[in-house]
Image 1 (cartoon, rainbow, N blue to C red):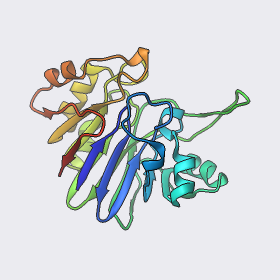
Image 2 (image 1 turned 90 degrees about the horizontal axis):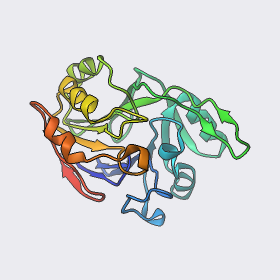
Image 3 (image 1 turned 90 degrees about the vertical axis):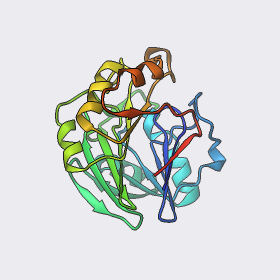
Image 4 (image 1 turned 120 degrees about the vertical axis):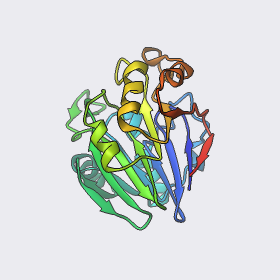
Length: 226
């Protein structure tokens, strides 16, 4: 299994002959190494309905006939845009042909902002567990620190965790380091930082704060083999 990071919260997982993208924010993402025409996922997983996470999902999914996995409300909205979707919700898991996906809690906002300056309810934000090839990957989405992260790590021992560190909209480095302690993954990678001025951070400082957990800063395009 190959897992790569592509700026902001974009994660690509290659497993069991499938390519999976989590939160495919490519256009407008100044930190990504990806070009939109090169993004060809079999599956797209979206943690929540904000534009920097839904990203280019509609365009990419239509071009590639990708399956889009999201919370029920967001999946329903995207199905109205002509996408092939699978709706889920917090605490629920489903076995797909590439592996199992489970949605976990995330403490954050939600909503689709339209061109008419309207906000459409986008369902509850989520974190995501992807379980395949005997490995477990956790993408926390956008979230604050919460104590039940300890339960997530105990119930589903995590090989690789992606945690937001940007502050302002999510956990900052200090809270993310404590989250890593609760989750106890084998490796933790920081995400959701430096894309915009309010979330400017030094990811190495986050790594230096970790206690009892290994951390790695991935540049856009770098990968970890599990």
